[in-house]
Image (tube, rainbow, N blue to C red; front, side, top):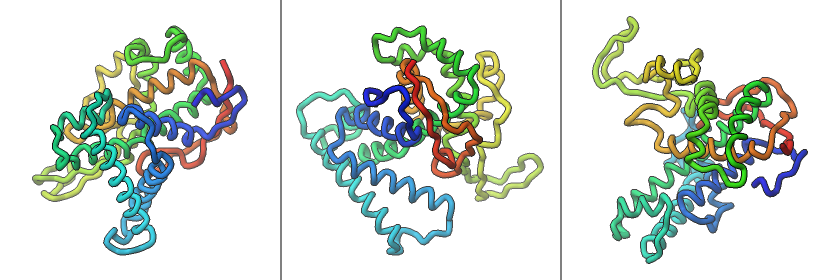
Length: 305
């Protein structure tokens, strides 16, 4: 991606970062570029758009009703399933050794039996659905570093201590405590989901409110921790259930670890070479959909460091 950049280039951050995370999915999960990349990416965009519509309008007609939108999303799901089945089946009958997540899923679930492809296919689809999360966090990071220059200077100084002759590695991420603080802070402000739902299995009383068995509760991560900070000392004082940007086990996001790693590595690689000037440093508000993206596009000018 950066090979096509030059100083002065203007980019739409969310769109570019979504492409980056998509290609990261290709290599990290499949070990290769996806043959039908364009159509698969479009099906993914259609699926997230449909989910956002359902969030904004819970009274939409169900999928069994043959509306135009419902027919389109069914075709998108069918194309994705067909393609992933073909990729997984081909891999299953290949005698080559692969070092990627798909191979680990096949080794874990299939044991050479093509009849058991459903589990790895659904696992890959689930992880595929979280591609927007790291893209959104990187977008928010660029936007805020344009506003808070003192944070940008400190973060750049920490990353500049890494060797620039190699690409950032997992081990390098352990040497960047301030980067982790910045990412944790952004996830505090913009968690991966606006709300989480729970079902009461038994009756209970919380803060004086009586909750009958079967009641549904919505937890709002966006609202419940607006005053925390993430220095080493402060983290030790925050209750475990007070900071849940990725939900909590056993409901925790399956992509949380790889998303965090992708956010840090992509970000480190970029700011080793570039800094940013936002064209309009205005108040960008989050949009409540499948994940908390910005309600308006974030544009930035790239400046070669």
